[in-house]
Image 1 (cartoon, helix red, strand yellow):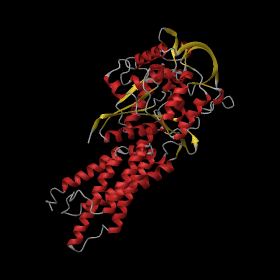
Image 2 (cartoon, helix red, strand yellow; image 1 turned 90 degrees about the vertical axis):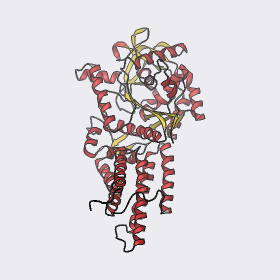
Image 3 (cartoon, one colour; image 1 turned 30 degrees about the vertical axis):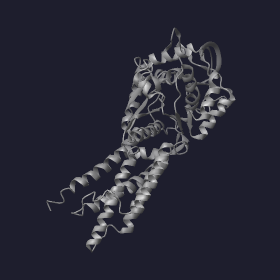
Image 4 (cartoon, helix red, strand yellow; image 1 turned 180 degrees about the vertical axis):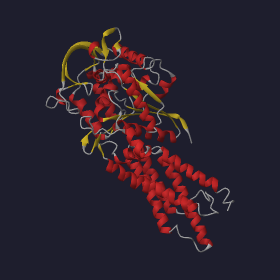
Length: 489
């Protein structure tokens, strides 16, 4: 049954173009893809957005260090993010770039004017400590030994006159929306962290930088300043769907159902972005899902340590679904995860090659040896316990996906796989029955297993779309072959 009247709008964050994509973005992209594919499977009208955040000091500095034109450099890096999305078999409907003069820039300017009209933009001199890695000024509470706690680098002292946004004006209202559940933050710990920041009080935030120090769109009616990252980047979620002209698509899709983001940019999505939307008179997103980082062998990924995992190389070596499976099964969705090639290969061999791959091969191998077997002989299970087990795991799977517990959803699928393996072993399916009743019983068992495998394929589609398609083709081929049983023989 389709439900096209119900929309589902999901986004990733937009990564910086100061470096090629790493496995952390791959995690976020496939998490969002699971949600998009799952809701499409429910018949909903899904729109899935990703893109790149290209303006700012980081891309500018890296381009200059490389002796490159900054726009050319951003074009190249953005292209790499487009490529990794394709390589990972991510089903996004659109890809927005913050350097897009046609779709993005007009929407940003419109939003700026809305904030101005609300009396929430003002100019003042400011002196503060700035982290280029975060593209953000740090408060005293956020500074540890003069360094950014995330990038562990000495902060830069910046003093200049900028435009500011009255963030402090909206903290009480945001707190109210979070507590009421109107703005859901997942997991609970990140919700509490956001509420704690709000209770401590939020200072007004700089929304521009001097033109000669920052790459970005000029402030409307003041070309001496460029729009700062949060004013430029966060509106991508509305610019891509037609905010500037308030198209039918925008009216249909906004507010977003889910923003998928990393924990390092949580404050900007759970506090800054809602405040901007409130100022502009727009609805808040429904849910903000916050995932953790991926470490490598217990260490944070960094170029200096030489341990950055290239998702392109990983897919090239192991295949796209192996990479997707590891990210979704091994990495706990809302916590920091750890990557090693040893863990990757162990998970691949035990669950993919030795799990679903082995089950499908066993059942197909047995079925193709029976000349008079035609699947399905029945659309009903003969084994009530197997059918009951599948229904139980389907419920767990649904609850897990809708709670962003992707690993638990996959555990539910593998419980069905284990139940099928157990069924095969208990019934000794590989043995040849000596009686006609035994042969009929064997056909019923194989039919049960085919029904189970079909359901496994459906459940796997959001997670492992390539594997799910292979399962479907294998079952469909068996159906087609058995319409004309072994005429040649």
